[in-house]
Image 1 (tube, one colour):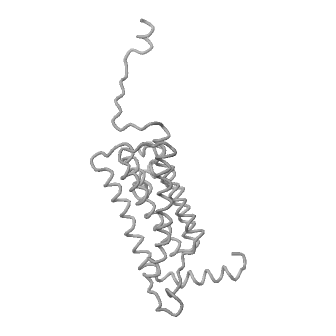
Image 2 (cartoon, helix red, strand yellow):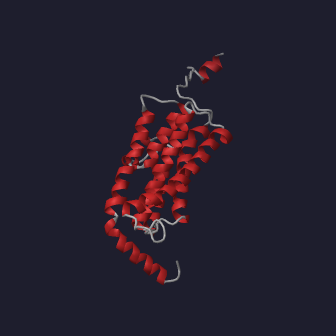
Image 3 (cartoon, one colour):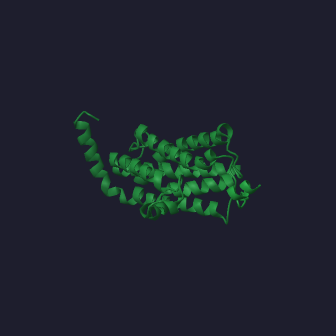
Length: 228
């Protein structure tokens, strides 16, 4: 009894408020969200982002916003299919038991739509440089989105950059749907995630116009090398 008292003079009672089934379930938010970003990036690499100028042969010429949004519908449908497969796999195969199953799926659908739109817009606007920028954002989000370590333990640069990374809010919403919602944090995170669509719409529909000629010239130069 004396040895036990000396080794552990005080007891610790844990009361889980938002429990998860395992450490792996706690880390699932980071890896699931990153997989959706990688999936969106692979879509932009494998599918053409430049739409035809006309809807059908001999039909009227499509306007710029029609070309932009119409082609994105393909990426949106593919992204929804990806997220549905991944999040259903988390529940049925990995064994996650979300407190709010529908909101859990809603996180996946919303995250995929936002991620595909961000990467699609970057690639449409900046061509191959947009793909490189998407890879750069992926690397930053691995460390700076707060998925592996609390933000308070990260360097100040990551703490300051984290609110401007879409994966940060996707991970927060994922965790809220999985373990439980606290003071509407789920809806707040989802709202911040959707807010990233505003600058991307501005870039894709307005700011992209001066870049169209430059991108076409760059594509022609790359094709003339016969290497790409």
